[in-house]
Length: 90
Image (cartoon, rainbow, N blue to C red; front, side, top):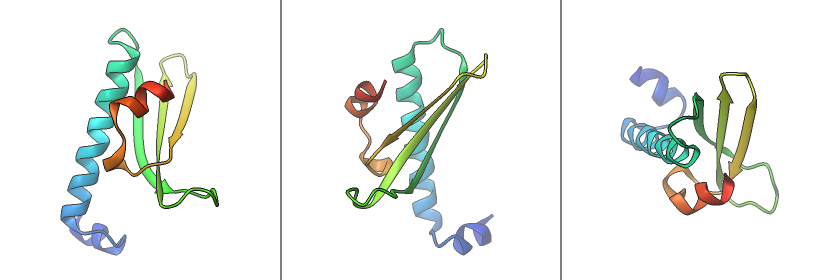
């Protein structure tokens, strides 16, 4: 696995930090949606393609059990996304 991470240009430490922040954001989303909402929450950091956006963006995707899908992009890196950002997005 470490070889794959290095091939992607990331250090093991940076990968661990990104995973921690992704789990933190998933928890914030689940808390915001309520415990009765059941679905898959995925989070990833990506390159923002908007010329007005500098740096990375965080994509949040929610797929509910009835296959309804919601996607949100927050124009901040994983480590910068806060509970306020999640509240504004959802």
